Length: 325
Image (cartoon, rainbow, N blue to C red):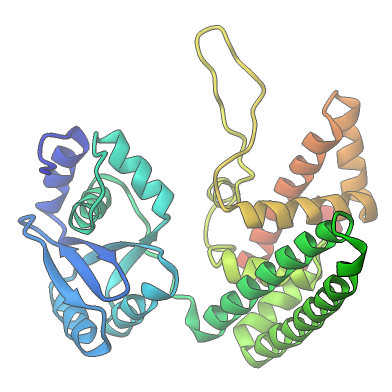
């Protein structure tokens, strides 16, 4: 399917006159690559071909756009970072929305590469920050911890629904999951202490009310942009930015959405704890509820304010100051 007839792609063609933009669709075995001229090609998702590919892009001063597909995209990111190639890792949902907005309904690896290249040309995508080996390991550990916590929660729900003669095995499994989670917590703490940058970041985050080890690890692993973006963009990434849905005379209340759901849940819990323990946040929540906000709306506002403060803390390198609330 051609892309030239879509308006955003025409804008992208003008940008491509000045920038060497490359779209890459990543799968387990190969990369589908689309560069200027639109002629796609394939590269094996192996270290040697990726290194040669990245070196060629470095000479052309390319900007590469690819989807964040977990561990399958890590070798490409490593090769690009080693060669000093600027790149942006796109949320797959955002890339799909862009394709649909341009009338692209079908989905193949080849078309996805074209879409990603056009997306890089049409939009102002900032270069992704290199995660570093410590942060990447932390992300893997935090992701596994989240999976085990979900499994434990499900098993606890089943405990009240299952036949009595099966409960002993279920309780044993819940205990095993709890032990695995505790072991992951210990490994997360060890990885954090071993990396000076992560250790310094965690110390700052833990100085804020409502932020414990789980929240701090989640922010470090899933929000590497913290401290590098303005407050509006960081709130949008975390899914805490109020979204307008006005239409004609209809102006409903703003609501949050999008972003990274796991971070939103973590920050909501952090906001809840902060609104119970920190006098400034307690007063802030009380003012909002007195003005007619529901308890949930007030806690979300506290979470957003807390995130803004955490963002400023990492940008300035200064611990939490209650006077900033």
